[in-house]
Length: 374
Image 1 (cartoon, rainbow, N blue to C red):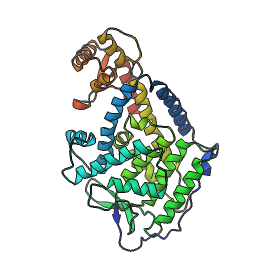
Image 2 (spheres, one colour):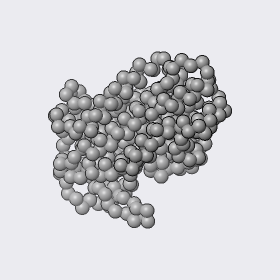
Image 3 (cartoon, one colour):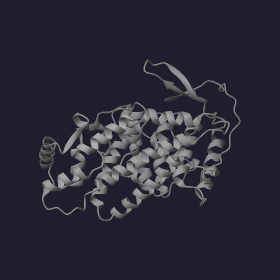
Image 4 (tube, rainbow, N blue to C red):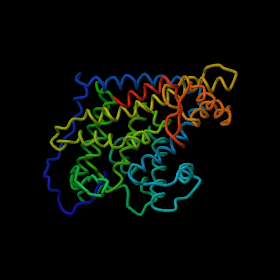
């Protein structure tokens, strides 16, 4: 999905809509969405209990997640670089060499600003524009100002054919639309009757439908997702990359966005498909984080036994790198040896190939296969 500046006014002539999130306080929230909310809250509680005890592991996970977030969010927009360069840029060990790397460096700095300053940053036009300016700090494009020309959101198929997907708010109306959105969000945020996990994806959807900037709206939406989640005390995205999750299922993510944007200008759109997809990705982050710690505090003196316990206790496929993060005192050579013996004995099976190879209990792999076929 991409945006394109349009000359003159867009064909659609919409009245500038208002924003009212009071519907989120009703009891008519789909059960699947509420189940995700309950699961996320429960998993967050486990995460909080572990932070002091396993601070070193959290620190290591944060470093990995940062690199994956920088890579994943840019990859969605076709901004690519080899992993070694992304890792070096993410860790401030290299200077950007080309346009793609400048975009990656800008995302890195903006992500750092969100992580370090989320308590001071607010969901208002001033701070959003400041983050956008930082996003484009290495680029020749001007960042930090709302679009000056109308735009349209296009779909581009495999053959390169373009088709209009959505007509955003006009350039002239963008400042007022952003003011209305941020004021409505803050009012709902301050309301005790509205769940923050339901409110945040509504804001993100509306932001994308306004499409306030000439470029960078999609990447900004993912940075704002993290900002709003952090401010609501849901910080799994610091340790498991939310952007990488979205990248892995980006077509489903954009399809949910498309469905939820139908009749948006008329104020008759259905937010729930996008809320459901957004929360599914966040829940997946929390589940992955929970899996990292499923057996960390099991007291086993034998390193080989601890490796076995790590794999057998994981409810999801886990890589050798993932095992090494959980067991920093066990060498990769030992982990590889144990894994090879477990595969040979039939205790575990492989999932994926090459650098994406992971391992899971044989009985759980059968369950994963059934779920993927259903």
